[in-house]
Length: 421
Figure 1 (cartoon, rainbow, N blue to C red):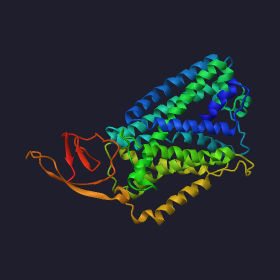
Figure 2: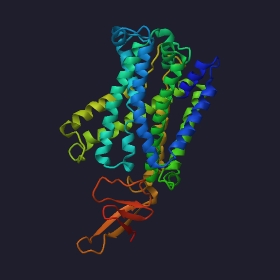
Figure 3: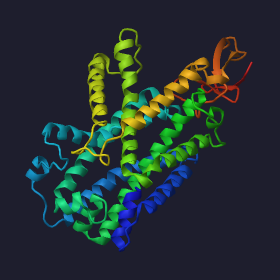
Figure 4: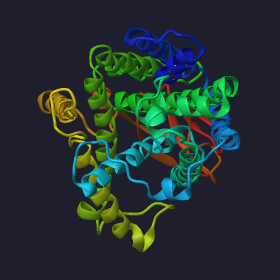
């Protein structure tokens, strides 16, 4: 998003923003994401609903406007069969496989539905359906967008390889639609990017909150706190600070920054791989499926998914240009090994002595007896275990659901407030 804003500046003046200016824009965007995600949960929901329609109608607007204003369009042969290899590698197959990485970038983030499950009604079915719908809609809208823009490439060298304004898409907008319409179209892109960044901040803050709730992070007792609006503000700003640190290498080396971006995709893909492998190997005969499942297709789909993740993750570690030099070398393996090494060391040295999944971390659990009322027809006792750390909001997917909040248990379907015994 910072680079698009920089291209907008270049488009309207002779000034070309340098690395420090682009980084300053990046920091300002991070601060906006932090402010937006510190708001009440219901406002975040409204924000995400606006985002969906912004992406759909924004994409349609861009495609229609650029197609209508491009005087001479490329042929279908160019769009669907033209092969351009500027990588330096002679192997067409290897170059084709590298091209798949662009699509893999888009296959990260749709799991946000899982991270938001504690704030989702009917999460057991709503979460998986949200993930599937995100893939279907993004695939359809993205395909239309890419095909439309490719038809509008009038000069591959000046628009894609070496765009004057710094960003290929901005250059296409400018050459096709003129300055005023180009600015309007870039603002649509900027809005879409801001919505995406905000949604990723929202999801990542919930992951930090969930890890901290189980005591799995340093400073966990501070990171799992909620404000009066039930938002994990500390986790939000922890993510903002972390993103600031990750962005620092961009100042002195785009190669280092690219390695960090690649690690993000590799790490998220492997995080998908681990539960899939556990399901199809370790728990193949003992796994109890939930209300939403793939039935007899579960294992075949899991095998295909695992092979795809392993293949693309390996490709993300490979060099993309030849001959390989210190400047264009793919250093993604370095931060990946560093992060995994730190995590394993953190657990081996410290965490394994106290951490138990789902047990509220070092703060432990309390066991309580709960009486559901004085009516003999309703009265019965439950022995429950819960953490001092509350979920952010209740999951109302069941008829009867209890959740812990400040050492108090609420029973939503009966409308009673049950005090800790």
